[in-house]
Image (cartoon, rainbow, N blue to C red; front, side):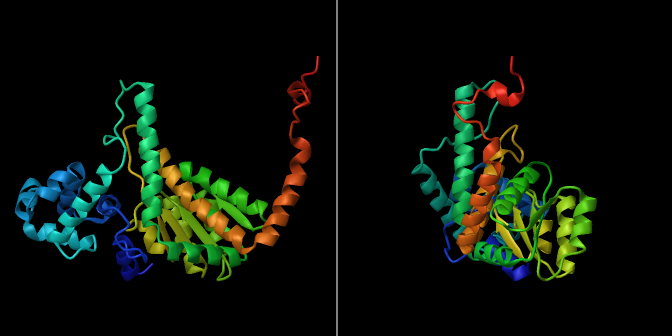
Length: 315
């Protein structure tokens, strides 16, 4: 993905400018900022309302940095300057007040189950809404088209992202799309080395920094395959080896670094990819689904059949 495309993507220029939250963009940009610029971003995220009311001099003083650094930070977000940042923060604040979300998303060791449930619902719901608002639908369409036309698809993902990769592989397999999931780096590199321009490689990494995903994705690109990445951070290393970049928007809470809100956001993108491919080949997909359902029908318990009989525990 080119530098121009990354800048356009991170600034929300996806055909619907202004739909993404400035806080979402700041969180996504943090890993790529200089230490001084990162302090500005962290201060804004810690107190967005206060930052929106502060002058540029006041904010620079709170962050122990210069006015120039604050201006550079604004431009890194794709903004013209500090006045536009304050306007974006004010817009976010008004939008948040119109929602019924819980404002605090931290979970403490003493929180009751009701509080934990409420925080998780808030965090997961917000991740889905913010992902939907800033997802580049043009890039999504390109991902669907290239995957739907590919000779074969490689998926590289590990740990929690690996579980989602497995889900996508199984679903694509059930509609007749050739797809492999590789979680072992040796296997993934060996497979990537055999890909061609007729193939697609998809890497899934919330942080965008997972070496076991980035290395095979980069190798696949070297061999001519179209590379697609799903990540929460558009300026992370995985973006450097991606022809198509799809970003999520999940914020972390205590005990949940890379937790379920991130997985739900990733699953939303994966659902969009799967449904898009199924739409492109709906007749073949429907036939394949019918065949796979028939193939496993004999292994489903009926309401009238005792479970113990199928488990081999008859008395």
